[in-house]
Length: 277
Image (cartoon, rainbow, N blue to C red; front, side, top):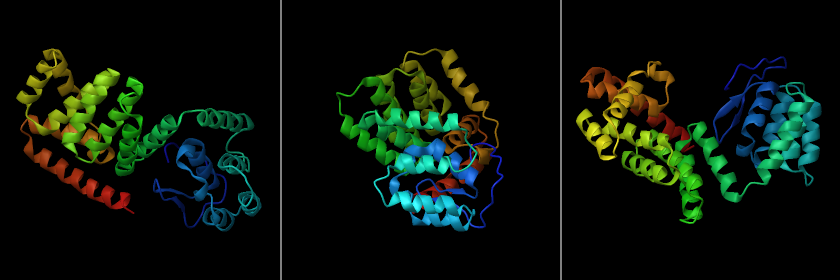
């Protein structure tokens, strides 16, 4: 999970897996944490007998399981079922659950496009790049040219990140530039240059920076940012690994470049297999 969770309830011998994100949970506390932070990715179809049986058989919360079985057969909303789970223990306080309900109410007031973007962003956060890319493509097609520029630009930006992590280099460059034209976010332009750094040599990167009317200092900043990526390569996202690999390539450290690219390709193959399940 994304943070340390103090678990005092029974730990399951077999985890429950949310198939769309591949997240495994073993305790009631982990279930609550996942629900609280990922409601947008939870559909009512996921709140099924499989989950209710797991709650009863694996973490020993038979009363909660029975209440959920009773509620799901009625016209109960997804929100009500999730709040029932959150309220069954003490992981979240009454005030926190109230805040959760308020945020969920606010979410329901969003437009269809805003809701779908949040869903796509959720999949992107879980490195479900193929799923996220598909949702972003649908959003771009649905939004059309009349969409609010910054909102559409942010969709293109995240679509570019999905493309970069799937090594769709041409699409990544195109989407980052489209994002910058719409949202004027410097991070979108920077993303474009990072992709250039991965695929071209230092001279080409410098020339591209100049073509966009930016200074030599800007070019040096990009190289410094890549150089400062000191985390262990296996702990980094694929896009960050590519940045580091690009730096090694530009500095003629081909041995380290080859090693990192082998790891990246291996991770991509594994991610692709998982995302197609």
